[in-house]
Image (cartoon, one colour):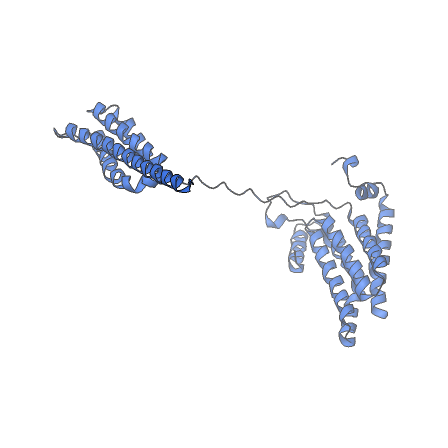
Length: 272
Length: 43
C-alpha cells in the first residue's frame, strides 16, 4: 500500500465518521474499500529514522557512498515495513524495521557489526511491542489452480456418436441391424484405441461410415421411412467394419512377424 | 491460537502491561533506530 492509497483510505474512514486508528481488518475476499489501514500508529514508526533523511543530503554533499547506502536502505526499508504493517502484515513489517535499523547503524553510523545486529533486534522488538495489539492479517492463500479439463482423445467423439446411435436405435425400425452395425464399429474403435498408431488407417472409416450411420439414425428418429436398400447397406457397413478389424489385425500380425524375424536375425548375428 | 501455542516473543509481550509496553517500545526504537541515525547524521 503506498502513501496515496493510505491517504485515500483515511479520507474514506473520515467520511464514514471513524478515526483511522479504529479500523479493523476486513474479511478475506472483501472489496478494496474495506482493506485494513492501521493509521498513524503504523506510519509514525518510520519517523524514528528522520535523521537519516538529513544524513542522505549530508552524504550526497560529502560523497560518502557507504553511509549514503546505509541511510537510503534504512529509510526505504522502514517505509516499506510500515506499508506492510498497514496491510496487516505486522510481523513482516517489524522484521523489516529491524533490518532497516541494523543496516543503517552498521553502514551509515559506522557501528561495529555485532552491535548493529543487536540494535536491529532491539528495533524489531520495539516495533513488536508497539504493534502487538494490532491484528495480524495473513493474506488469504491464492485460489487453487483449476484442474485442467480432460483433453478429449481423438476417439472420444466417435464413442459419443456410438453411444447416441445405440441409445436411439432401440426403438427404431431395423433396430437389430442398426445395433449390429454399431457394435461392429465399436469393435473398430476399441481396436484403434489399443493401437493408436493405426488411427490414420481408420480415420476415413470413422469419418464416413460412422458419420453416415449416425445420420441414418437421426433421419429414422425424425420419422423417415426406411428405404428398401437400407438393410443391405447396414449389412455392408457391418461387414466393412469387421473387414477393417481383420485388416488391422493382419497389419499387426505382419508387424509382429517382421519384428520376430529381425530379432531372430540379430540374435543369430550376435552368436559366436 | 492459544497463548501456550504462541511464539515466545508474543507470549512475553502479551504478559507486559500496555503502558510498559508502549514505554519499552518507544525506548527501544529510540535507542536502536533514532540514536544510530543521529550518530550517522553527526559523525
